[in-house]
Image 1 (tube, one colour):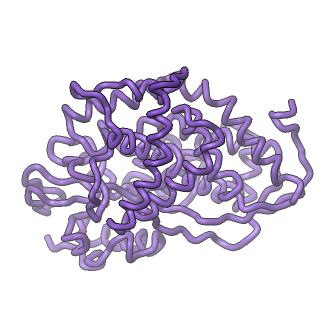
Image 2: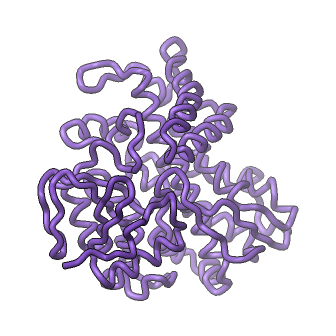
Image 3: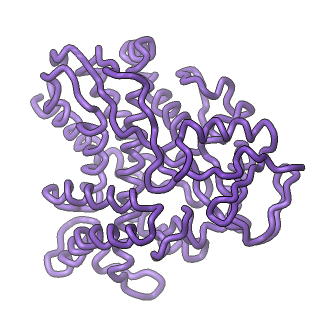
Length: 400
């Protein structure tokens, strides 16, 4: 079977998200296993079944050495870029920070943060909802989770965003990572002399693989928390707001029946995964859909393509509240499924509940937003203008 040639020069650094989705769809109709010559060459899995099976087979598709391309001069991201048995030990760190009770414990704090930000713009009759809501809320949530001081949240956000944006430039990435480390590692180190009842204090004295965590470990762990808990949730939140408030019928259906809010969250995640996919490396030769992939080959797990596979999702390009069971791959699959997925879902639900309650007539103030890639396969809306009457239809949670 021949490989599709439309994808030959595909890379998130040279192709827009919109063009990427078009390439994925053209490639799917010709060959489900595409190939790109970029980043020293890699195969691309596009069909839902192929991607899901590969994500569930960590013995064949290794997450080491890194899940993004190009390769960067850094240590592996804890758990995310590790195979068992190392993965198990490092994943337990996240499990100690995020328990089944964590979303419900954080929810009233998130709701308060959301309403505080709405208070800041509600009387203006308009806002850049990305800058004024979608960016700060996830950053505040993840900093609350680990114990970062509230006053440090803006600086943590700034350095984290700069580091992730430099993903395609190894030299620049090193500089930005050092800035991020200066802010975050000092917080962990300070807990050794001034312990608190927070997760950073646990990190300060934690052992993994028979040794104490060091400063490089702290950088990787904080980057993992901030990347998953802040960066990706910001993207998902903006996409959810776009999908709901660009369609008056959808917005009004959610306002009439709150049972539709959870399906709306899942459908936005399916259509607009914050990361279009991650890379794996084969540990042996494998055959997928008639295509032989040699061992030690890079393989791209196309989550965005899989989420729009018509065999898995009828009318895949349409935002539907009646889709029913929605097993999208936006949080990954298998042993590397995002440990913070439940927190992200809670944040998205709460944001939508509060916007519908307080700004029920909100709508987009501009044209269709343009997604961009930044920091690897991370897709996001940089700005999203919304307008509304400016009349507060519901008391702020901070006032009630």
